[in-house]
Length: 70
Image 1 (cartoon, rainbow, N blue to C red):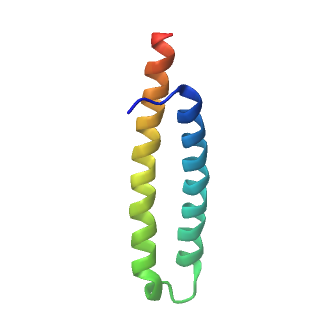
Image 2: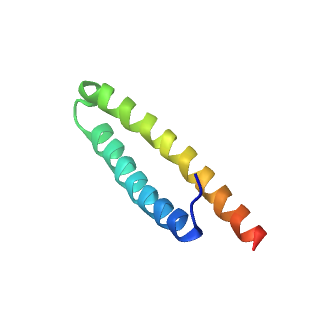
């Protein structure tokens, strides 16, 4: 699929926002008194963070490639 640079920039902005929220979620769960109780939620959030970081890196690469072609 082809995306224009404005779509890529907006997608990155949305993903950065979601990443911020996920990181805050992990901090909140880890700060709980009985953090072991939330182990599965913490693991899920950390895996999502990793997936979003990969996605953001790929989007940044596409934006860079787009800008280099211009």
